[in-house]
Length: 401
Image (cartoon, rainbow, N blue to C red; front, side):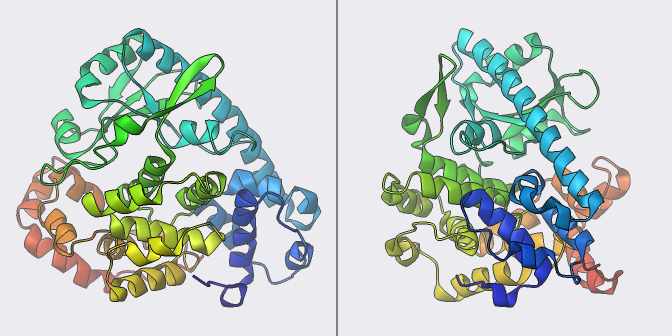
């Protein structure tokens, strides 16, 4: 995909430069000083875009040699966030090792996913990767044993005011927290799958047989295969709704660059079709091409089973929305649109919306999950959802960053 500097304004070019420095640390800095010297930069928008795309700590490293050209408050914000992230990463890493050791003692196979796993793999030679919590994966049969381990370590379940049945039945993880000094309390998301079940269809059926191991401080740390790591990043974006955030995208670009020549694209193509994730993978890979010249073989674009009209829609959606707005102002609209682009079947997202769990319905529309009013709206959702869609254009206009 050719997004190109010519299609971007100065704030977007600056943020893209920072992200490309993550993927290519030796990227030539030529032209960045001239860009930063412009009098026309909307620094507030730059900051908001950096926050949305989760690149603030990296911005400090990428722009460190040009910090005198930044507004003083922004330079201070980038520096403080960098060091806070560095400290937080170290703390979460040590907490993960305690959890990992305790699970190993009980015979539980524990696999870090996303933050911790990537920090030990593709970010091993880089200073940091921002993380808000610890994500781990276990086999579903080990769930009760793992919960007991967490309780022994001082953790408690965090159900966010929802019934545990909702998390077990409609989600694929449960959160745990530990009360410690303010600002350090760790949250852990204990996953038993990378995505919730649909029509009793399990995805990535070969995942556990493909687990690899690396040496970490004398321990054998188990990680997802690099291909399943790519799937985890794609599914994470689909599940949480921050579809256009580039954090998972530069993670994916780093994976493809590091493991080029040893990446099993045949497995990715086979599993994408089997688990009905062709559109999800195509979406992520199209985002990757926005940032980098990642080594994605032509056969991947050719063999992913997606009609040409949908390919065009996905690319247009990415091009028009990735940098155009700070998505917090209209995130629900974009999430709903992306929902129809990220699934292979047109009916699957419709089915999910019509049969959405009450808790998810309440969260999406900002309602109390177990309130009588919510019950009424939920029972009449076939009318309520179209009504909200029609009403939305007449709401207060979205703010531009």
